[in-house]
Length: 486
Image (cartoon, rainbow, N blue to C red; front, top):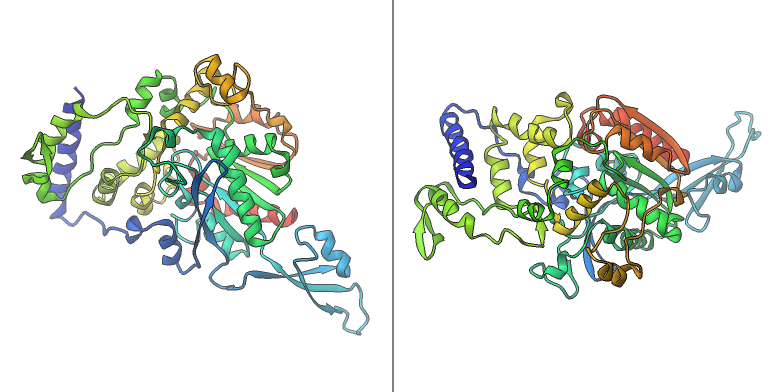
């Protein structure tokens, strides 16, 4: 049955493409579909840096940085405050050791100071953006510059850093382990919170010489924030404000098919995590090549796929939904089609909630060639545990003995969001199928230091990163709050 479904999908796609290519209904392939994150940033004229961070347990993570905007190429920002030096110190966001005092300004036309003002040059405030499940740092820059949060913050005078969780496209290195080893993939959002986040934030602070950052998390990015900031007080002190976009700490009311997947047996989740084989060129697809072979015999792509699908190691314990040649081929050949790109966009909606008018359909191919970006099967199993058990807790290793080995107790420790004292601003969406409003409402009662909450009734899960109206409905408010709490 599985083989026939594959055959049907491939034939339908090829048939549609063949019938429409001659009619000119394929839009040009966006060059960003073949770019990495740094290249996308540079493509739009922004400065781009890549930094490698080594976690305490040996994972090597890639951080992307936009140190400044296109108009201001300085790494420092000019700030003016009333009340002289004391006024500058009261602003709180700048250490007196980091700022270079300027001149006293007398605003009175008569030459008598109504109130002295000091102008100083200080390091740009730092913002750290953390993506969600199956995503990567490209989420913050795959829209146009006028509607991508990463670019907007850089142009607004912030030093923007973007994380990549272990196991995604850009963070697949380790000091001693290979991605081919099961041990490399033995992680979940526990390790992202306990190792990735502290390593990334401490690296950024050391690099910039600052004491605090603004933390912006989307989806799973909020989950690891809740864990890290509630369990590591010294890390929490380094966060000015936690901006929680579509926050997730439970999924009791979520209706996404991804949540339904989490209710499946663990074995089936492992099966669904395996990627399909890479797609070849059209010539090789039709006539075969030496690279396409079944048991040593040359064959065309479709017969090879059908013959070899049953040979896959379906019960792996490693990677779940990585970015693959197959997905890139679909994105650049199907999602650029005038008709079929609507289908590509609807795949996102089916998983995350519907708000069709708020997605830039001309960018779907760019989204799809970078997302999904992969994670570990164990991470998906951890999400499955949260869904099944309705408990926000560490990964259950499956036996009292294994849990005792990892936690020094026979059961996984629980996470208590109430222990987090960081200033927190929350945004939720009424059409969000992953961060359901009912789950968010429960979460809101557990946040001890909530400084802002806004609910946007028509928004779904991806509107927070890709929504056409996000700049004025969300990003401007975030920048205002950053300036308020600097």
